[in-house]
Image (tube, rainbow, N blue to C red; front, side, top):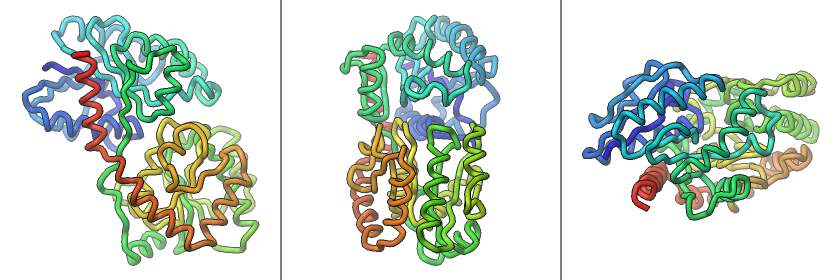
Length: 375
């Protein structure tokens, strides 16, 4: 079988949610199917670590697609021309972008439709591109895979796509994430939080991650209870808006906010494992991998009660209203003060995490590829 894959988000040391989905699934699928041939399409020089097996041929197509005009050129000319002249059985796109001019069967992995709900969280050209093209991508795709039932229902209702065309392919969690012992927890606190206990957020600092309200909730938590607790913010400032900046600058306890930027996988595992709790409260999410990472590290979770997050966490998290600063702050206070609550969340997380793994994700994605080819 000849399988062409959009791998433009496989970027060394820069993997985010969709990049990790691409990496973890393709690593398993390509190595487990040596008789199939995979062509990985990159838009720039690639790292050899992403060529997982001998049955992969990497191809670089120009231009580098990191702007809406270049998105269009890359998918509608470079990718389309390649697919139309190459005898491929299927084009798989883990970031959901289709090639409207290509004639082969196509599988789009559409993770969420955040731009349909909160378009103003994105730059003008990017949101206009998404809102114009993703309905077309959804209709062009032979099949669609998505990461949660919430996203499946969202795609169905927004784009009038029949449920039978959409496959559920949940995210997983890297096996590296596991509990750490008390000594490693102490070393981690010395390294990152001035030897203080801390709450934790992990994710790109994007408006829909609700950073402003998280900051305000942390300030309220600190005001309600005298303590030396910090909050560690792990992630890059992709869309560090004026609102987020001003909220941070106005904090009474801004000196207790620790920004680490991107961390290595080892440091990230340790920072999660030593936290009081993961406080992950976006107001829109297609899945929420940090929820699983925390559960795998025996770290309690506070997360939002809307979109996909209740589906992922179920009863293994404290669910809050992400639009309510009081709701977030009260949850932080409850988890901080109540050791029995923390232990209950850890135990429930150990059970819930068993429903997710990258092995299961890869198997489900491969089934979706087969569905695209043969149904």
